[in-house]
Length: 155
View: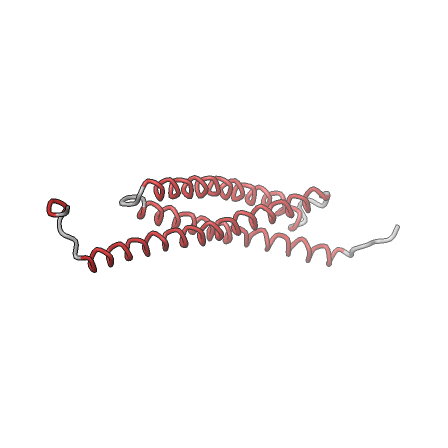
């Protein structure tokens, strides 16, 4: 029987997998910070907007809440995966199957998906809020230019 991968190469690959998996905790923390920022920003602009804008803000909040649930789920899966992988890397457990690689790839996909989606939502929220701010500026400028009389004096 031919040895396809020598032990040192396999050890390096497993250690690299463990390091990447550990780094995912930092990625998750980043996404959690982005979610916290988006929630605070949306709450700040929730008051004093028209009904249509209020509906859109509520939709953004639901999306952010949903992604927050997904990132917490991914965070617990990372810890489970590291607990599974740790004994293999430390040679306490010598046997493992392709399911470890499958879990690694699935986790990587989940984390990238949530991260990319939150960044997209952040850009959309900023564009939306920028439109609200610009509309308010234009409205205030129009009021200043017309020097409107109080409502009781208007015809």
